[in-house]
Every structure is written in C-alpha cells, then in structure tokens.
Length: 407
Image 1 (cartoon, one colour):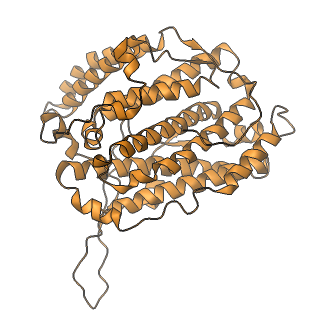
Image 2: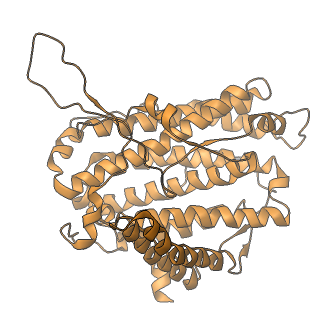
Image 3: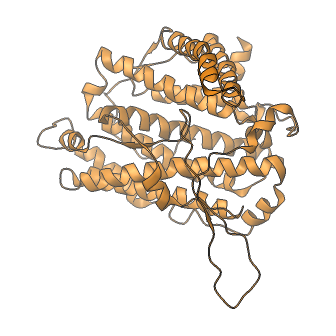
C-alpha cells in the first residue's frame, strides 16, 4: 500500500535519476508522426528570394494519435436554446464569460532568446523527442481550436453567451497551438496548420460524448502541466527548454475550460443522473487514462529527459484528475486501487508486443494473425479495468460559480 500512496505525493519526490538515452528502450523514439513539415533552415544570402521547400508527409493515424472531433451541431443548438432548456443557468454562464473576457494570459505567451539557445543545445535522441512532443501538443491544441471555433459560430444565434465563451476558448487554443508551433521553429520545423485542417480525419462524437471527453481532456491537461511545472521548479537542473516555465499560467486556461464544461454538464442533468450516464462516465475515464498511459509509456525517454519517472508521473496525474472529475461525473474509476495500475501495466506490455509485431518484417497476413491474440488480451484487460467496482460520485447541486485559481 505504501507504494501506491507514494504516487500521490508531490512530484518533486519522484525519481530524478539521470536518463540514459543510449538504452535499448529509447531506440524507437527516432520515428515520428509528422504532418506536412516546412523546412526553415537558413540559406546563404542571395539576391533573389529563395523558394520555400515544403516536405509533405502522410498523416499517420493510430488509435493513440491526437484526434480532431466534430459533433451534431443541430443537437448542440437545441441543448443550449434557452426557450427549450430551462436548466440553463445564464447567470453562471455570464460569470464564466467575464472570467474568459479578462484574458489573464493575453501577454503571457511571449518568447525570448532562451528558446532558440536551448533548442540548439538539445542534440541526438533528446532533440528528436522534443520535436515529437511539440508536434503532438500542437496538434492536440489545434484540434480544440477547430471544435470550439465552430461551436462558437453555430451557437451565436441560439445562445450568444455560450457561443462567445466557445469563441474565447478557441482563442486560447489557437494561442497555445501558435506558441507550440513557434517552438518547432526553434528546431527549424513548422506544422502547416492549414494543411492539417483539410487533411486530418475527423471523429464524430454526439454532444454528450463531447462533454465527457473534452472535460476530461482539459482537466487532465491541467494536472499534466502543473505537475511538470512544479517538478521543474523544484529540480531546475532538468529545465532543458523554456516552454515549461510557461506551464503555471498556461494550465489555468485548461482549468477554466474544464470548469466551463462542468457548467455545461450541470445544465444537462440527463447526461449525469441515470445509470447510462454512469456507464459512459466510466468508459470515458478509462479511455482517457489508458490512452495517456500507453502513449507516455511509449515515450519514457521524454519524461526521463526532464527527470520524471513516467509511470509515477502518469499515476499522479490520473489520480488527481479522477478526484477532480468525481465532483461532476456520476461515477468514476477506482484508480487508487492497486489492481488498476496493475492492469495498466499489463496493457503496456501487450501494446509493446503489438508495436513489435507491426514493425516486424512479416507479411501483412502473418502480422494480422499474430495481432489477434494480443488484441484479444488487450481488450480483456480493458474490460476487466472497466468492470472493477466504481466509485459513486458527482453532484449537480453545486455552489454558485466563483472564479479562482487552482494549484
């Protein structure tokens, strides 16, 4: 039990052993999911304007890749129609709107010369790992921008207050994506976000699923950012790139976005107060937690590079996110049960075997045959984790909204 309790201690207590990037498990990190990269290497001065070279690469879709989402916008308009839905607390939305209008981070994302200098010092596997981190993070933030922007546009006539909040959240996400893309320029790369908008596949979610998934995404983002920030503040020797210094204020954007989705769910009690809501709440908790855990365990070299133990970091984030989520979701997973982590670790082992099969030189038919028992085993672990006795939680009877920072 002591080992599990250690997971919720402050992150500065986590292992800070020096990472070893020449170890065999780091070898797979030289391959990246890239999406139309633009080379920006500096050519020698010439009298004519050099032609920009653009390397276009196909988007590699995997189950764990950041996704773009769309939804039933007509249903969204119905849900937020004040004449139809009497549960809408416009006073609470007005308070949230004023919070977003304040725009605490308007002047926060200002770069300095530290960025390029730090990027130039990053070499070898660690440099490649940071490029992938920036790519994936930029893609995820840009995904939020597109969804929120469209919701802001579609709800403008139905509910101007909610629509404006979505528009202001899209402002935040665009700011984050732009800041991350600027970070890529330090490595002489850039994501072509216009190309990304057209080329990326979109996943359709019904509105209630958008609420569950996006709430969790924003809250888990908050806990990831604030945890990394606190750890690096306590262990400055691992501060190898200045973007992490911005995480303290940055994570408050994620927290405010999550609070807004909490208010949206309160306004739709049918999404929270029956047995189906409990089943869906547990499903989305499991999906988000497992996705993060499997993704991060494929990239342990990144977390080692900033002095973190990947699995301890992830469990800390999962536990804190789950505790936060329990305030609104009608049921959550018992993530502090040692059996839950054991199942996550089993999934990591199975996923590593699946990756090895996929990278083998076998013909496609043989690969697929080898994957069948592994996929079955992974599905079995997922089902077992889902069927663990849940924690009954949540309440739609909240106190009035009070803007505040959470640390």
